[in-house]
Image 1: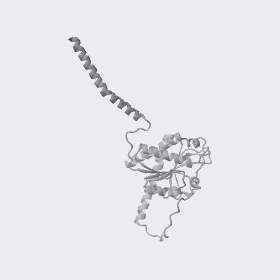
Image 2: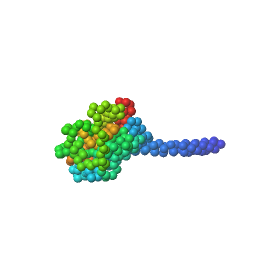
Image 3: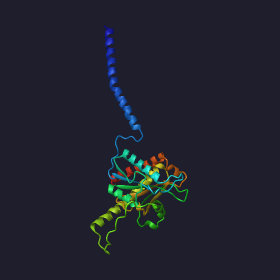
Length: 287
């Protein structure tokens, strides 16, 4: 009698253990899978929702008949700016819900001002023209970011503008000029609104430039050469915050080689994306 009870109890215990195992096993595998997913590079349960900078226009500098500066290894700038812009787009789409537009996706010639017009037509919230720098000084290296100063033709940075825009051709005919304005004609409401909009974009361009400079520096640990103003033609018709981002010097023995490396471009792209997300959070808070 006691033996029968013992065996019955043992059988019941085995059955209960089996039922428990059937419940626990799937849960265990689910948790293991979840941990592996979270441990994966760049993994995220939800994309960051952009609140202010919802549409980003990236402009890979040069292209087509305008190759840009050559690197120390002989690779021209146009072949480096495009893959970097594409990597920024990939990381932005992965990390956020931002809309991303590129002014070019192939080796094509696009006029300087046409690039900004494309950004305007796309309804971009920011415009970033990506370039690589060069100098007669072989020791020059690091990051520089420029925003527009229409009167800066005689500034110390006029040489940078000349080098970047040398060989650029307008891909479309310039817009025809309107009739000559009457002397001392009063400003229209539209002109006042446009001036206010351009002033705000100018201030926000400086903020965008500073955020890019500091954040990319933190990610790639290269010298910060500062935020500057210059008369870049590619910025002159932009109706949103707009900057020229010089990500490094092709003329520098080490930096010129790194700029062509996919892993380094991935780090640069990470810095750009991190800057845009940080700026969006800041603007959303009203800072």
